[in-house]
Image (cartoon, rainbow, N blue to C red; front, side):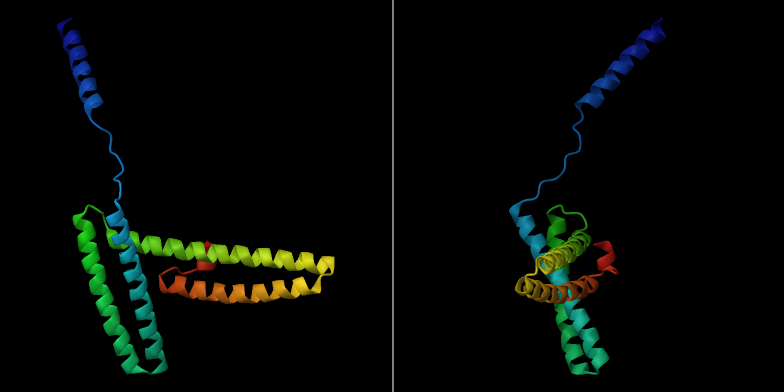
Length: 170
């Protein structure tokens, strides 16, 4: 009987201790952290662009431009490290990985919106052709052409930032 009473008391104490612990809450980000993350994302994007420009210059045979681009990329990398250090001191876990993910996410979002606008323009063009409105069809065709240029640019930027198949992911 004593064992049963002591077991019940131990169970009550255990339940009381678990009830007192606070659940893990998600950390709130301040405006300073948001501004620093934005700066980090811009630095990551600039680093990727400079590396791509250096690669393009090397392929073209312009080594002086490639060296200048690599030097600029090195400066961007130092900025990334400095920003990451300050963000880590403020409690952000893995700020560079987080910035990379956010950059890729925005790139995918841009590709998706461009594809949607191309589809909408194509549908509008088909509707205009059915209705016999040639001026609207020509305007929609021109809009499709500019949207395709934007799509190519968005795909290029997405590939620079590390997305292998941006259209498939969209």
